[in-house]
Image (cartoon, rainbow, N blue to C red):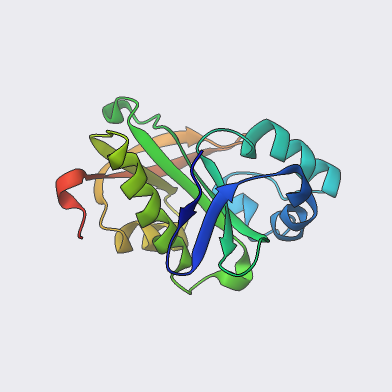
Length: 173
């Protein structure tokens, strides 16, 4: 899996030794529930999430350049929206102290570029209707609204989600 560099970030594979830093940010009750998952309850919980979810292909730890400490995560997986036809969807979260600095749009743009270089026809992104921060990231990256569908989160609740896509020709260079 490639390491991806942007102006301010390094996107690298997750590692077991990231468990404590992951717990530091993923235990924040403002972070996980907005993305559909429960706050981590212990370092052991974070280590389990590393093994079962984050240490998988196409999932990266976001690190500020000059550090090796994760401050968030970004990944790509087959989109579940009916009209997406399993095209890649980008999902992400970022630690609260780093919100509002333009870091996530920077990471999303880098992943869009990688997915198009791999041959994707279009790339998808989604957010729960009430998640305004994710909506802003999606808008800043140039995605176009496509549909709304219900989505069942890891918390077990059903959320109305808005799905967006961007085609290769829509990406501003």
